[in-house]
Image (cartoon, rainbow over all chains, first blue to last red; front, side):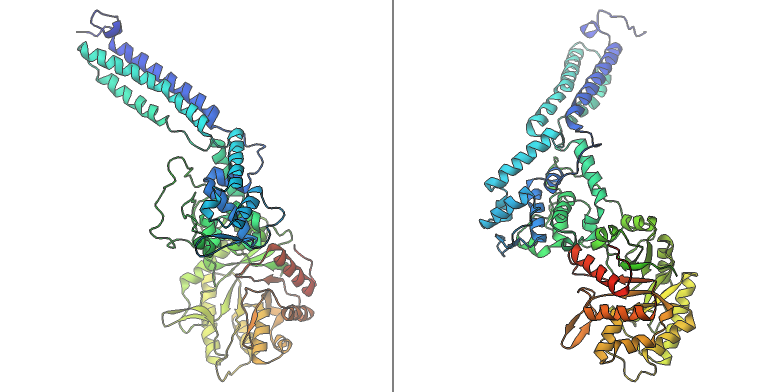
Length: 310
Length: 271
């Protein structure tokens, strides 16, 4: 018996199996490529060529979350000797922050005057308004994707799910028509995987990730691996160190305050230092910051610095 | 030797500050922190810029009773090759004995017997270094072993003469030793073979209970800067390097300190 590619009376929907497989393959590929190209317009982000450097607050919001932004401002304020924490984690004002402090530094300093904890500082009205505005700007510039944008991108996956639905309909029809469906099912598996993968939308655009990596490379001396001296580099670099490299920088530079103010250890941790290993044993509940956080630790690479001798 | 002028020791904590010094031509890195096959990017940039980066050993224990560890000496040589360093340096001290690590640089008794032991160790280290010149740094001592047979100057000169090594003079050590013994620092300076200086360490310290501690975590006191002036009136050291190992001050303070050393030494500022 020879397989005919001409439609026969027994063919499901009047299309022979092998021909449908090719059609289905072409349709799925077309749908996936179209969705990927369309997605890129959201997740690609701006060109880096003339992009200005990120501020510490911006870096923290892209690299981590609002907590990290607060921590980076606390780093600036600590390096300037402007705040302290009592043993219960309540912040207190000391000296005035320097004149070149960022808006967030000043807002956190003001919140410290109202005797809040580091956690509560995040819900301080002025702080929240400022973070809202900064996040909106970052989303508008394309460094991060806000919720509405992520929702639209997620909807793009529907096109591929439609292709999956077509395949299911064909399988059902084929089975009831007593025709073999194995090849079609095998072809559908990768399409289904891709459809689900397309439901995952990054919070940070590709350009945002690249910009973080680029800036980490430019300020390697602020990496926790080097145990950077905040007093030498000054408040703005201390804030940038925490913003770009995560809260680990804080625990190394000012452990007493980090402990007293109960800073979370695992916010946007990138490659931690020579010095830190073993300092926290059980407390870090691995990657609790969910799938959305950019876990890719740029600017690392082995070896280097560390281990200040005698 | 080339004149490198005023310098500051490279430490990871202040690497960004050191790298941005426009006039920097010389620095030193703690050898035990260098991975010869994965040199820190910042150090690499300095080497590529033509800055002389000298590996400074702290763990060789040249003053120890047992022979120096050849692998440690070989590491020093690998650091020199990786950093294209024209020389390396180590301390005349012991850091371990009988398998125990002191975690400190401990002074050596100034006897003929210990000169012989050190000379043997230095020669062994030189063999492992394969021709890279070695500079030796006498350490600051809060106490002296009893009954020294040699003065500090004789002790040092003999070691340097017999091994053909150079002198890494720590001017703050000279000040500390003289002060803690109630002697004149300039008299001690005059005893030393100043023509063999490879470079000079300048560092700060602080006073506790009548003793001066060479801490490297405080600013250089005026008395040490005065001694820098005395030294530079007697010789022209190829480099004068500020050695700061902790409690790093704001960049502006480091800059002031480097400028003060430059002024005392009569060299151009590097900031």
